Image (cartoon, rainbow, N blue to C red; front, side, top):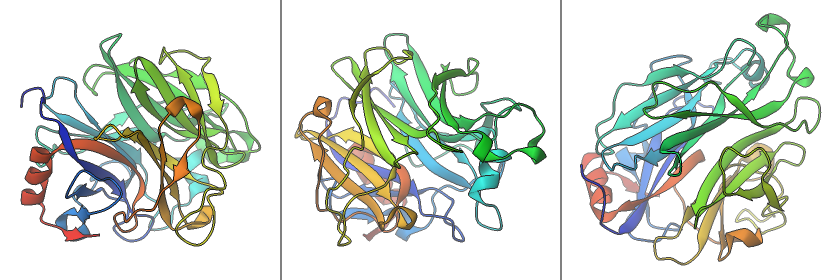
Length: 331
């Protein structure tokens, strides 16, 4: 594959569906056209496309990115399985400290899953890993949430004595990583911190959405340096009070994914409002100005039951290749 020069003409949604049987696996959907709010096709008739056979044998929070060389795609995901008797408290105290990695040359043929340790024995989990290409340094900037504990004695831990912090590392190949660096550290209550960061870039400025567990809503920061420990705060409680399609308002959410509209008409922000946050799934928002911190909810018909995933702009050729390999159904 050569570096892409074709304009983007569709969108790919990479997601999981929940804690039920088969839910903690990766599903894909694409748009028929160039509108991220409708005409979604669930590939493979909505069945999982990728499942983990490593670690906890379940994956959540998948994040997909395009390699800048144009020769491959990478998916990284949380190594976590709740189905079958696990719970979220144990997952933060005695959970996996690795992430799961897949690579593909064409979005269709994927490598076997690779379990990649990211934290040492003092951590209780590695959640919602994401990555962006840092053009200034010529490397991938990878970030995730972990709770820390004073000892490696996993059996004696309580998440209420700790909280989630955001860390980062860098890599060239998603095989070898630099040691983790503490990036965002703010205790928001017993067992509560900061999780689910996602980043987009515009004109050399990075915009970062992060879930604040005190209010269970995203905040928005910006910086011209991904490594900076001091980002400018632009907005708190992003999207709060906006109408949702289930007859209520957006009051809590997680798993934000942001992307520029292919037609140049502003930016979209999708935030997951699952049942335990008072909703029924992803709620799309739109803005013409990232720096304003102001987002308006918009009507949409999305794939059924998507949870914490990524929307990636793709070309029409990439969409057609996916539809040919995994015939699907309209959402």
